[in-house]
Image 1 (cartoon, rainbow over the protein chains, first blue to last red):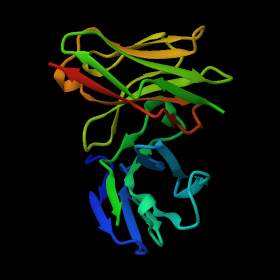
Image 2: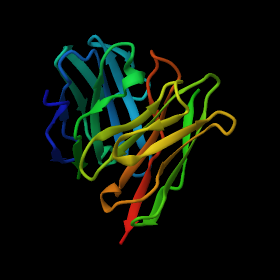
Image 3: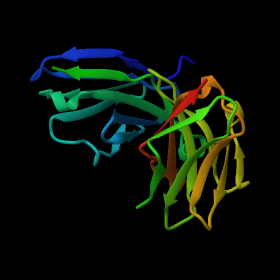
Image 4: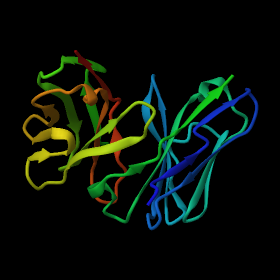
Length: 116
Length: 113
């Protein structure tokens, strides 16, 4: 398996523009997580899905952020409009079944977002 | 709510010296505990995990961690540091099999030649 695949690896955009980050989880994994990593706040859980259904979105910072999982092999995280304070590395992770905490998560390589 | 505290955002050790990265957890029930490692420009990788079996857990690359309930700690150690160990290390906690994993703020390990 190729692991969790995120695209793009780097994104530079202007303030006010819409940004879409993409994630392909490991085939067969039924949990998908979106994290944001910054120097100031560390690694924050934004939202997670189980069987394509959002379970907990309490970490989504504000209405400008939205996430979807239209099928088991694809998820998007969208920011509209983007702001400089959204600059961070965004990670996607996936895991299998109720035993997810027992086996840990598999992380993608991240998308480094810079909003200028 | 559960949480983890990592003491020291940066730790420096000489090559060949003992590595000790500290993690304390807060949980009302026996937790699941993890250490993850993040190399530059990469995602996080699972280093080792504690899931209520043996209290001394061995992971990859010679790392190990000991669960001490009396001290609510799960410190990560390696007897002899190698230059390739330079990375950021995250302690994490989960309350049960259905719960999400909460990460600490991370400790960046620097290896001095």
